[in-house]
Image (cartoon, rainbow, N blue to C red):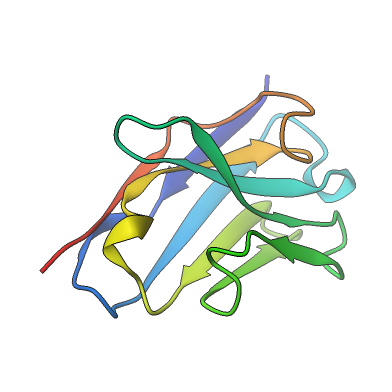
Length: 117
């Protein structure tokens, strides 16, 4: 069965950086686009970024463009999200999702990112 396990979250000061990872198993990772979404306290899910199956195409929400970078390692079945210049409004639980946003609904358990001084 599909398993997606996020890691790398934590507490960071504004302006800091974090790198999230998502270890995927149970499906042919290299055949699927992958997505990061997030959920801030009291709010709904928000799309953050998507990467094509081969990694050549990437897409970002305006709110993170220029600060976040999505990447993948198909040999290691792992998805990444490098987050730089973090802001308090980036505080959320971050989830990786199989496929383009909303296409499968299959997400991991999430990793908490808190940006605070």
